[in-house]
Image 1 (tube, rainbow, N blue to C red):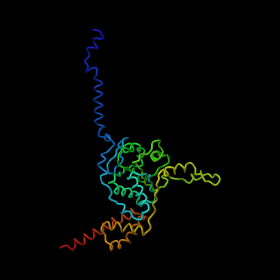
Image 2 (cartoon, rainbow, N blue to C red; image 1 turned 90 degrees about the horizontal axis):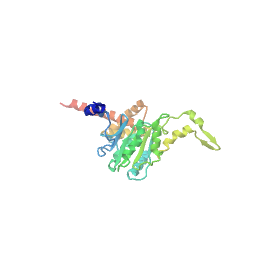
Image 3 (spheres, one colour; image 1 turned 180 degrees about the vertical axis):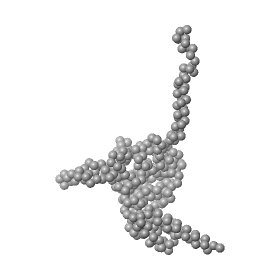
Image 4 (cartoon, one colour; image 1 turned 45 degrees about the vertical axis):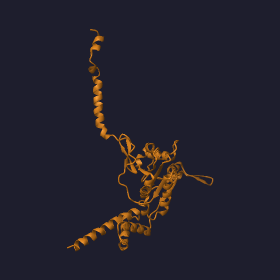
Length: 313
């Protein structure tokens, strides 16, 4: 029998056995990996929610719907009237399909920066406004997010809270390109709203001022300073927030105590406790006022319920 005859007589299943074994092992591996993979499509059901968070599973990202939203309204935000009016006007232009700016909100903590974004969503969700929250570390995925939403009919605010960068941070460059640094024009249905405690978003050092030069009567900042202010300048609208004075703080406390059902007499009695609360926290801010109002109103309600129970036969 020749070699040719022996090869012809081999059964097909013997010839392909190694290949079939490989396929079986690959199929088993894929079955194990399947639960660990992100959804097949990063695009969500847009009818399912009005707010989304960009989530990561491994190297892949997807939009997860936010099921429970804050109920805060623009009318709940006190003593930031100018900032509220300007960002409201910008957002109203945006949802109307008119030109509008990216917004950077900077300043003291707890002053209502992120609360404004939540309130704007509640105000304009019925007019097709949507908010996508993106963590600072995921800003490198901005091009992917934009690809998902640029053809949608809704108007999207990409929201990044408490934004700041360290020197050499890769996400810093990604945000610069997304704002105004790419050959492709930004989609008309996408804006970026960011909050930060730093106006220039990156730490600044004293020695960088030594790079400043004088040419005639003009002062030219050094390259390090220019680099650090270049990102914040790409936001068309800057809104600054400042610490509240005592009257403003007590005004916010009164608003939230009324929200929790306290009457005028109860609100007046709470003033001294509210000031002591702020003193212990070292801050008079909207957040501190909200936290005090929850604590004080809750304690009063428990005390009232206890007195009622004692009087009962």
